Image 1 (spheres, rainbow, N blue to C red):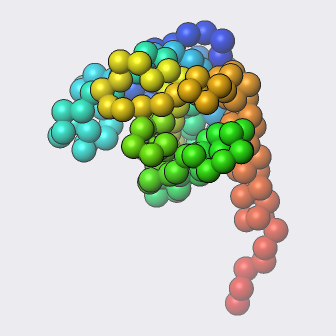
Image 2 (cartoon, rainbow, N blue to C red):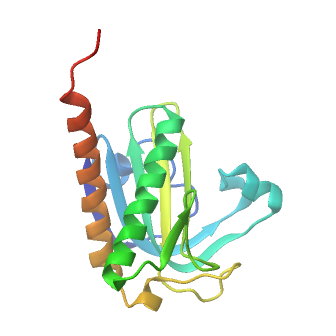
Length: 185
């Protein structure tokens, strides 16, 4: 699994959830996690979460830290578990940096009391599973109450590098755990 942070400002629109996003944009072939910073503005045509579509929820933020994750398997349940792993990594990092348990995970979402910290979705393509995980950097002008990394005095790029490194390491550890055991008779 490879990690890459793009310095380019990119608006996350939902269109990035396509097989081979990392390969087409950055020449990274195979399983990957790509980080970038930019606004988030997902229109209803690009929404993957049917509940969000049905409720008419707007997915918008002026400034977010985005992660696009692709694994080349088509097991959606495994993708959801990876999405929750990603949420736990982000939660644990913020809590460690702040030296207190401020952030809690509810499913794939992160909260500080009633303020939402993140957005996330996992989906499947014919070739792979895709995850978008976004962390608010600022909390201005969002459609729901939010908090962002600036509220915790966390620098986004260094944070992104740590998150991506931890996600890659966790996936390597899972592969090792899978490969080191013998089957039972």
